[in-house]
Amino acid sequence: AQSVTQLDSQVPVFEEAPVELRCNYSSSVSVYLFWYVQYPNQGLQLLLKYLSGSTLVKGINGFEAEFNKSQTSFHLRKPSVHISDTAEYFCAVSVSFGNEKLTFGTGTRLTIIP
Amino acid sequence: DAGVTQSPTHLIKTRGQHVTLRCSPISGHKSVSWYQQVLGQGPQFIFQYYEKEERGRGNFPDRFSARQFPNYSSELNVNALLLGDSALYLCASSLDWGRTEAFFGQGTRLTVV
Image 1 (cartoon, helix red, strand yellow):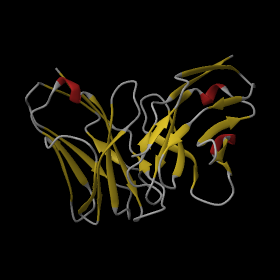
Image 2 (cartoon, helix red, strand yellow; image 1 turned 135 degrees about the horizontal axis):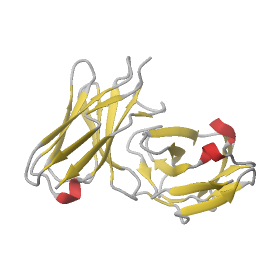
Image 3 (cartoon, each protein chain N blue to C red; image 1 turned 90 degrees about the vertical axis):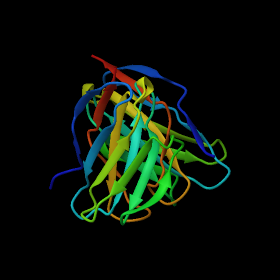
């Protein structure tokens, strides 16, 4: 079975500062990796995904993530955050095709400080 | 185009009761998945349906069941509700089977008292 670990439950960051949200996964087979964002009282929105190819993946809203197979990590980064980035961020993994049976981490709450 | 719609948005049930949650996928999407998100946790996979057939089931008791209709909408049923079933229930739809993005609805907030 696969699992996802998001070590940081909360990350406070000053506006316009860079941020990195950490994600590590465990799986005995090849994986597909995702980052989702959840704004208050809303569902999940896909930020970016890694299926194959380049290990550096760019997503929406200026976010990017790098797949590191040797370290089993898929950290999310943004060079300069905005107040509107305040949300809960979830890392997820799938071992079949792109979207079936996603296994999510426990989430990281990103708080932007003005 | 309308996104994934779920109904109701909120409901309160008593322990032991039964509940039915509904999901309408994005037009043209054939796959629907259900997830349970307990407060402070990440979503947990419950079911996936594709072309009206169950294609995946998570580690949930038999009190949880689902089905998909010919128009690809779906229902999630939970019998004999427990306090621990209180959660946000998310529905996601995707266009087809495999390597396509899952779009999530806003969820149904179920409170069991």
